[in-house]
Amino acid sequence: MSKALSINFDSPEIIANPFPVYEEIRAAGRVVRNELLGAWMLPGYADVMAVSTNHAVYSNTVWNSPDKRGIMAGSAIMLNADPTTRLSTSRTRRSSSPAGLST
Image (cartoon, rainbow, N blue to C red):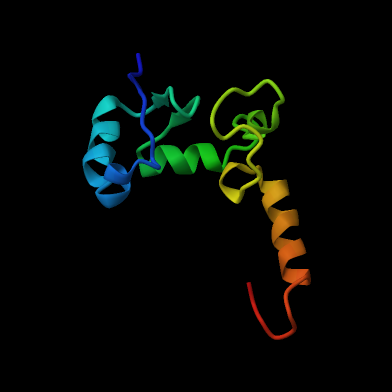
């Protein structure tokens, strides 16, 4: 069973030195629940790659759910976007950039 933690990544202590918290997350297991965020965290590279490339099974669309209670509810950032959203956002950003500037 996974361990649950409540980690505020915006706290000044964690921003100043995040490494002890990273170790705590890794020690908690391969899949760790962050109760504060209302989200699951994967501290291992192989697990992150497996989940982030299997879009048929794993999706971030829950973040856009109106009943989502986590602090990131409705956040429109690339980190919590599925590939089709990231791709269309990237194309939009590229097409709206001044000529000669890459994004």
